[in-house]
Length: 258
Image (cartoon, rainbow, N blue to C red; front, side, top):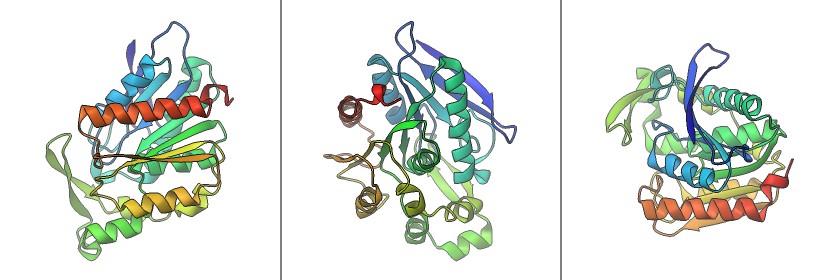
């Protein structure tokens, strides 16, 4: 079963997404967060969500505000801080909707960064999946673009393959994002954590995924998907991703973590 939701965050912006579940009784919660300039409808997010729901989990897929999808706002105003607050808002809504008081978070790229920050702050997060996670935003942005021009203009072009068009990404994304020192959060995470990425990753640095993994002090696992890139575009790779996530959730007995 599927049901769309629309809820307000504390800034008065509407977060839109979809809730999926299979049985009359809600299963353990999993909240899925997308990457930069994509939405909850992206095949990678959607198909993994479908697989989780089919396996008996109750899944909430959100599109962040100030992203490119149905939620309010513009990418020009997108920030990591805003994404963190959106995930927290959806968590509260999911708890109220299902009557549960714990969840798993799964995030991709910048959504993974927002997810591990939330996990470090909220003990109700009992499992964490980080797929192609953004680790060192400052280093990555310095490598990918010319920062002085980005700052001077106040924005940069960001191509979205999901929408097949360019959007303006505001400088506040960088200015806000570098305030979050990853190691300050990763070392505080206590829930079981899975870090997963593709061997053909080209956008982010694979060694950063390894460094992120090393910083985790919790029960953890590192998985590499052969032949997959940053967005796991093929259904074959996405299916493999979903299988790895489901297998790991069973291994750590997530549903019994409350």
